[in-house]
Length: 502
Image (cartoon, helix red, strand yellow):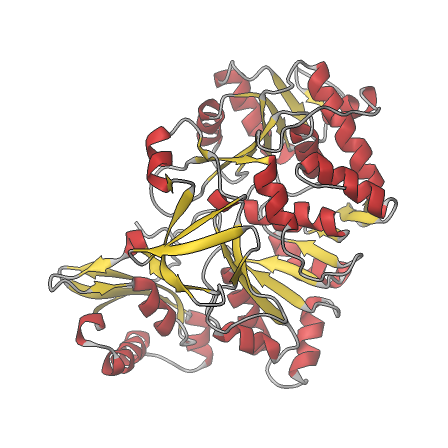
């Protein structure tokens, strides 16, 4: 069947994979399982509930950790012809209420871990007509029960959905400035998930560890996983990831670079008592073959480092505004240093060193932000804000962020990310930000204090200065780092685990 909407994907997966396990997750100490047929039935029931409440076509927010209820609610909302608004579960209640108002939300489906949000919405968001608890057994104090809604609305559901109609509003979690509501259509998400054949076999087991409100997880873990017939295991907490790797024994995991770097530190700390491949299998559950990296730049050296432990890292590149994947490395088609080849549904070009992309996954715009939309889109081309180049075979290389570019008094342009990537390769450097300060380049570094202690480094500042001196000896004069700040605490990060630069 032709797949152009998320409803098509749920139907296709039920028809193709039926009673095969679609999701596995823990309830207490037990592991429960839902089939592709279960997903189809539950999402249709949720769609019927949306219609019964008079919410069809409205904006409906979802907030909570990754759960089966969240996932089936999302598909139920968008497949009813309504608009899903995933909200970051880590935000304060007041900030969440502000986003609900900005997105014109009229219904909220929430996880009880954020019961405070339900209270705040009742008090300050009169435009939200219905509040639904994912866990409540029955309706109470005006809050509806997700479970009751599904049982009352069982049955078939179909409605005509235009592939280009608004499907989802996702708020960016950028490192600077106010968050923007990215408008994505059914086609944006469906094409991004289905256009590239990664040759992942049916029944492949994946562990989803990233926040569900982020589009990398939503599209590549959930939507693509459904389409290709993966069994998706739900990690109930980042604190339990190591335990869940051993419990679910995944073949594949999607991660952001910060997680990959932290995992490597643990692998390295295991020493050489066992062969590296044995250590890798012990750490990752015994079957892990592939880690897909996205969300930020990963030092290409980690690809080789993990290969020693028997793990393939496939680095990709994308942004929320492109639903999200723009390019991806494949096991049989990759280039070191690149962030992969442009997806089949995407074309790219370079304008003043900035990467622009065009294709069926490019967003419709920012919700109720016409000026910002006009700045980001030009004749269908998305200005990514990333500096880099595209080679003759369509492999993409990133050199920095346009808005972070340091322009020195002598007119030279310096990408801070280029310097950060070089210096951060040292074991002593855990986190680093490079910036201009009083006409010189400054590095602010959070050292790996545990590594320093184990390595017997008493003078941490002196050791860091030696690293900078070694870098400066080979760097052009205008790229030399002449000022150092040593931090005692980690940098503040957004919920995508990216350092807030300003």
